[in-house]
Image (cartoon, rainbow, N blue to C red; front, side, top):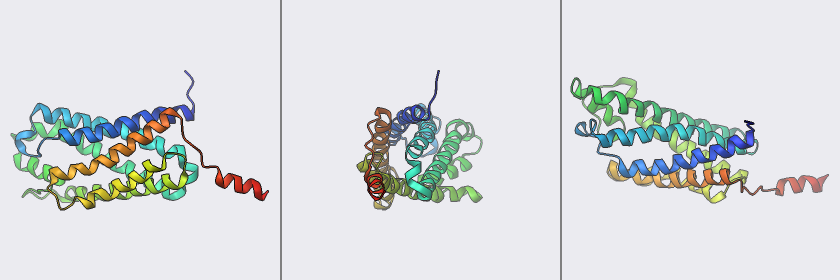
Length: 222
């Protein structure tokens, strides 16, 4: 088999689209973040899908960035790096929620409850040290990463600009719903999911429209 950069990027588009679809799906199916839910089949399925989403997202976001890296500069790289780091955090914590927390519910329910509170908006009584800061850090990485990647996608004009604009909306969505209960805040995932599906399908289909205006200007100057 022969692998090319372009082919890998296009196939990475499928990973981005699948990530976006799963991102929306897991928000719709996510159980309440309470002790009684941790040992259920629904918890295992949803968090298994979330782990898969994060892995696909790492591939998909990398493909989106690589496709337009030459036009996005340092701001594009920073946006990619922040979003990539957010996905690593999601994968790491989801692994714990999927495979470790169910084993600890009976032995140490206080720790499990406190751990669930990191992202569930209801911190437990146990002090988790630096782990407690992961929730706010994750939010910052998500918003800054999505915002920068969206803006640079708009400027690069190699992928659908509306999808880039939707990434910017996704970055602001958590702020817009911050006053709502945590389960309802999950609707903020929809713009991100739709944007990743859009960008991923654009890469996979190979129908990107290159904005050649700067090149035309350079040719005219010569």
